[in-house]
Length: 338
Image 1 (cartoon, rainbow, N blue to C red):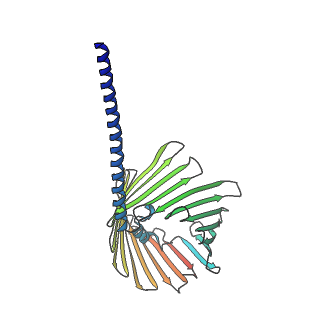
Image 2 (image 1 turned 45 degrees about the horizontal axis):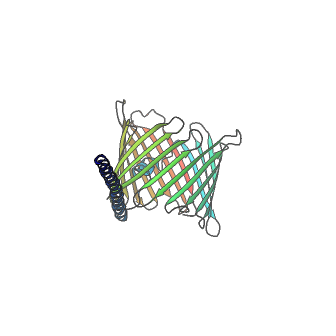
Image 3 (image 1 turned 90 degrees about the vertical axis):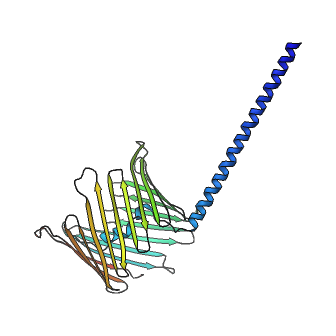
């Protein structure tokens, strides 16, 4: 009888301990759940307040664009180029654009013709493309239909002469806290590329990565860091831990802009760099000049003949050896709907 009473007491104590342990486990789970909810609320509140005081951020490929355009935009030496664009429709929803480029060195002529049709009520933009390589392209863009700030793009190409096809699916999501881009190549793999940019109080941070699904390998990984001021832009980047570089842009005055770019790769003895400037003596005239580490000097002149017609002249030559072949270029741009 005494042994049975002891067994009953032991069972009661065990049940109490089990019940107490179960209650404590439930309380711990609820505590963790509540803490997570509080943390999520705090994080969301901070992000909202952070985004409320910031501007929309550029995508990763546009970081350092201000300085990069000083080195690329307006220079067409080595070619003769003609661009034309026009719009039609009651609300100018149809746009026709074409371009023809003649390469001086090879004598080759290339061109393209694009038709863009906008449907604002549906948030859809449809573009049909054709070029002299006999490639047919179709681009479908859908903006703000599935979510605010979300843009979906389907870019496809087809070659009728050999039956080859290629395509890409792109997604861009923009809000006040971050700008994200996703690019999926549908040819082989597929090949996935992702990038994101965020920042705070003028400081920008970005990351870009490419992943090959077929081989399960990370193909590239890049980081960027910069600063945007009222009249200047600083940009630095690291590509695959092998290439290091940066750029600087400064608007000295309302008609004078200067910029610099530099880069260095591991294993190379020297760095690559360049200086560029843009000066607008009048509203109709733009003068540009740049020089690089190879002592190549280039000039470009853009004259707005009218509000619709623009003429560009550019030239490049080497200062180290004047016997090198000089390059020149002429461009004519007609845009009647400026």
